[in-house]
Image (cartoon, rainbow, N blue to C red; front, top):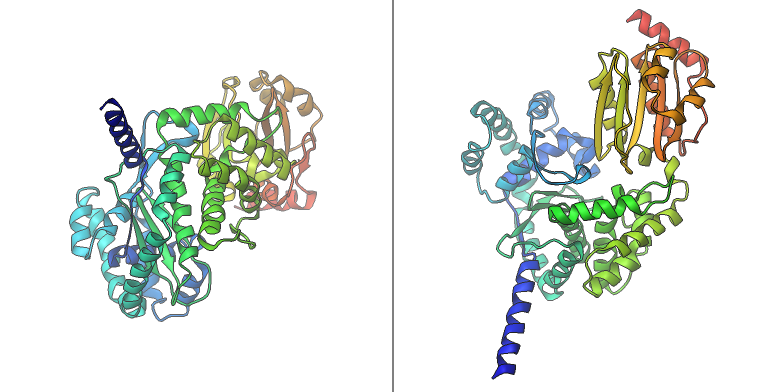
Length: 494
């Protein structure tokens, strides 16, 4: 009897564990969701599928009136978000109005239903403005693509669901949640909203909003393994984001201690690289029997890193091991091996930024936006200083400090940053006048000094840095004299 009860207890324990780590997926489609996806895409073409944008611009929908409604949609503050406390600064948890809107739309069958739901999350005037846009595009979208593609979407949803069940996709997603260390509530369904794309060729994309994933579907799509990999890629982002707060703090600590002095941490790239290695690499291998030979991700850097991480990701998922310090050390080694000059690549240098502005400046917010637009950092904080001294902040391994001296005398600037001892000798050798920058190391942390006479000079330097494949250490980058003269002339004329 004792052995019998022990077996029963073990079965119950395993059942409990599996129910806590299972991730139930539901393939569905919703016209309100697809409509929002369409309007969001044409409002932000840089982040949308190329064939959708091309087809829209060739259609009769793209006219002066539509562009007015697009502008009204862009003006809505859908990116307004609230942050949850207790998460590390590099991995803070947020939910935006757009996250809420898309998640609500996934469960709606009509705009009337969606409007009723969003009335609890937005001011009435904002709801009215949003739904004027939706109601304008609704009949146009229906005629353009929705009505024609609906029968195929229903058939595709059924076939995709059958394929996923027959290939044991839920078994893989359960192991993936375990690998990420994310205990997903078994009662919380992740809705996968299928949205039609025009045309049968091109690149489809996905995105995760809260616990909702959208998945673009090309006309006549039958490559179910590719679509499953796309869905699980987005699920990887969701699981990475939903890791418990204590585990996120532990990961941040591990990632901060692994890089050697002067190395760039792999941490900012891990979310995308893990999702790619696990879904586009390992899951594709499980579903098709071969490792994809083409590009796994459209960014060549993420593509190379994910392929370097693939053997480790595969082994950890197979052996049901949660990401640990040993895995992070392997990831850092792979990153350093693939990108030995990573600490000089602008995209890495600007992955986390502390912008310190010396002197009075009206364009501080414009400078922040310029950095965001060019480098899309995972974190960006700033300090504006006029007369007080700057003291070094506690070391942040992932952060590059940009000290921007704007129209401020050299002696005064040196007095304000006198605590940055390692920077002073370099500055005393700097060129005369404004319009140059320097990348150096101060106390083991990266520091970029930028000195300008105008905001236009700062703008040119940032854009020039972005175009450089590597930014050398301890070498001055100056504005060409012709560019400097032109900028000064434009500044005077304005």
